[in-house]
Length: 276
Length: 178
Image 1 (cartoon, rainbow over the protein chains, first blue to last red):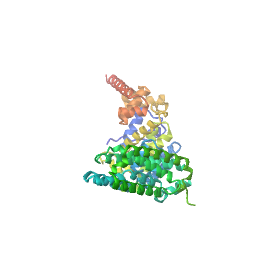
Image 2 (image 1 turned 90 degrees about the horizontal axis):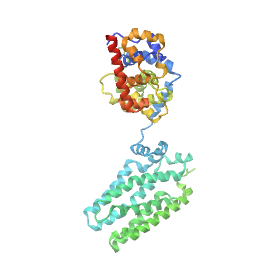
Image 3 (image 1 turned 90 degrees about the vertical axis):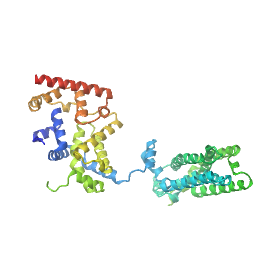
């Protein structure tokens, strides 16, 4: 340590910013290591800077920023792909995006895929039944009012329900479809993308049906119906019949038609309205 | 020591989610940090944002201070980089380097040459652009890329200006010695 310290005159010139480069640099290098001079500069800066930087206001903002919970990984991911932060929060807050849901659904699909992989073709029907239905169940959970703690206050503020549902559906599909496709790879005898159209079709049906009934009821009905269908087909023929080309076309038509119904009837999304 | 907790102790408190320690740290450092940032950026709002970002980073990662050197130096390293990152988002704001408020008045020049000798005079004779680069790279410890973002000039310009500024200073000092 040298005996050099910031004298009053230098301090005044530094704070008023009428010092020279060498002088300013000396003060700044010194202040970093000398606690006493730093405290003097700090005090002087707070006094003079009130007009420039309002330290109380900055403190309030800083405290607010650290006290609200950090956005989840998923929310930050949504922001990263360009969604405004308030919308990212609205999408990510849905129960369906909690880790427990995602892990649960992934586990069920993985289990079904594994059963199909190690078992004989008889076990294949289970994967057939589960994989395409999983995304529509997740979508339903993502905007069913019973599962969404944030939906009520959200809907009190006017926010387009259609936009919210579509955003959340897109987010679910972006998560679920790659997972289904990936697990489809391990299932013997099937090309992975055959799951795509049934999955999309069911999601669209759930969206359309949710303009009449609750999304979760719609998704449950669709899933049970699909399960029954696969089971019945399995008893009659090989279960993979449900994924043949002409059936795929039917799924495509189903998806398109359901989506049209959903868009036309979007103002009936009664489930997203506040109860009162 | 008059019983006041050291900065390092306050950081330990922050790591333990002690908002009081955080507040003390803020009061101890926000002033000089914002003043020093304001000397590098004319936009007060941007400076305020950078100070806020700095303390948010401190709250989130208080343990990234390794305990070597001064907490103040560590804080400054975060603050200047937060300012650079804020400036990157707002390219319309010009950095304050080389603006008229850093050019000393004529009588101060004389004082300087007495007080700091040849170095001060040599620094004062540099063009504002070269001085800005010296300040950002040598004094603030920024990389050429960060300095380029702060000053809103290409990285190559930072490198040439730094090279020339050093040559100037070297020549000026050699002249003074002979």
